[in-house]
Image 1: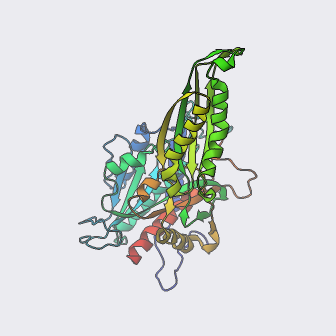
Image 2: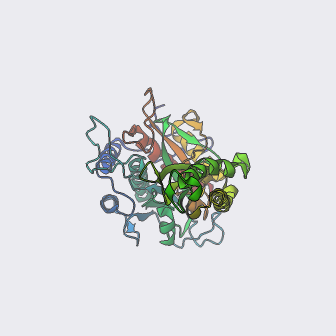
Image 3: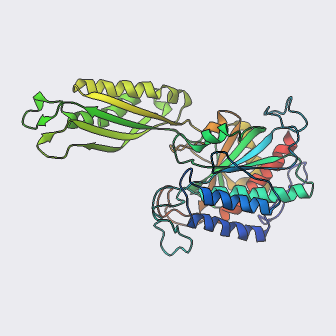
Length: 419
């Protein structure tokens, strides 16, 4: 049976909503256009306009978010929408399923060679696959809109195109304030995974990503001559000890299974070899696999830094920027994605995935309603090595677009049947 065939579920009629070849080709071109014109978070005006234009062409009524970029679009008869995930006291129409995509790019150069659709914007690239995510949700929306015209969409669906995922604490917080979850009872998303072959997805119950916070530390004290360090606040040594000792102290003060880790990305101090400076700076990230440990992390990190700074008589100033909690997949929604993928392409196309230390602001939605994220395979089958995320040479096998579209359309139909 080909992937394009509709698959019978046990005891159920075949699911409609496979991706027509003409639309698949159009979506590939749409993705390449986005890839050539990447935009940073909260600057996605061209991207937002392109999505809006295509949805309007299909007869839909997308609504740009009040923050200026990003949009939502409801498909189907929304009527009196409720907010209870199980449909209780929800009026005439149960809460919607939302399909979420992030639309922003990264501030890094596109280093792909011999690629006709590489970025045309200097130092900007879709190096995390958000162009794929966006195209998948757009494609699913167009397929579901056609089903609605045919009277074959039993329950409304919301498309959510969210800006600024790459900016802490994530554009999801602004989107929620704009009311994108009003009337939504469940939400799903995919994230490109270059370790998984195109045509496959990875699923996991529970935490699938890490919490991620930003940490900035300033150390100040009396400088002086390197010949007399005893008369100074030896800031270089103090900064070095903060860099090496704080991660170890923090890790020893929580359950090791929580995966709480402080990692530095920048350390700066001084300008001359024989002058002890008066100022030093460090910055890095705090990542955590466990939600409870994430809540404890700011106090633990502050205490560890102060402990080391006081040892060297350095004054510390700490800027701990809350980022995102872990994405914790709801078991019911995860199984919805499993059933949808099984219906479309078979159970053999699903693999277990490990928890990632990367952060994802999809987690903010899951603080409000149940949902789940799947890993969408984008590696070309047989390709050696991995074009990792957030690297300038990242690219995706575009077969993943079709897989993502059909995963989402099947999930929307199955969710309606099981409500």
